Image (cartoon, rainbow, N blue to C red):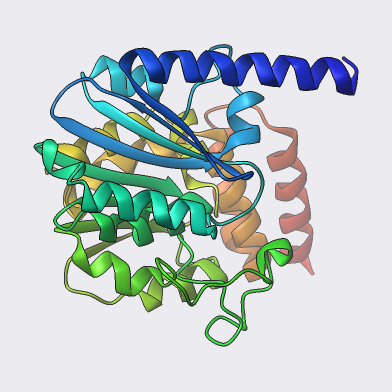
Length: 302
């Protein structure tokens, strides 16, 4: 597909989103970098944040995250989409949420839930302040990319120059207005753990997701657990005990097994590596684990 054809296809796709919004809610272009799509269904509103390019390049229906899932639950949805790695640092987005707050848009719902992962989790924490009393679901969030606060953050260079000190800028402060915030992160990922440590308010419940890496949500999709986790948070049933029970299936997920092997190898524990590889190979094949087992046994013989 040529660049011109891709541009035409993208324009047609955005026209489809606009038609859906016009018919069942609203669709707005928020400046040059962001888009909002609202679809009204039931009394629960899910506010999601993601990269617009990921939506366009995603599954066949090219809808914001979880659209079919949200619609199947008869929940309403407000999907915010960013065209690029913007961290939603745009006055047009700030004005949009100010307007929704001032127009009492959120008070028209029985429950409001803000959801996001990574950049989207940063946005969910911040913009939840426009709807005090909301529930927030944050997966691997950043607290801020302000270089004065998070100078240790070495990722996301393209977004460093943006302003994180204006409205809706500091996640740990803005999320304090929520009724409850669920924060999922891997404490073995140093940068993610440092961001998580900045979230200190009493309304936050933290769920360590060891050996799941930064892309926790994509792993949960493989485990068929992303939707159950979100549903439990929305229903108010999520707790550390329930989460631990749900995560038991991770031991049989190949990506989790690979993440676990990588961490054990980084720890320099050949005996543990050998034991883990044998346990995995007892249930399935795996060239990576056979190779790691041979290497670990060689080290143990020295």
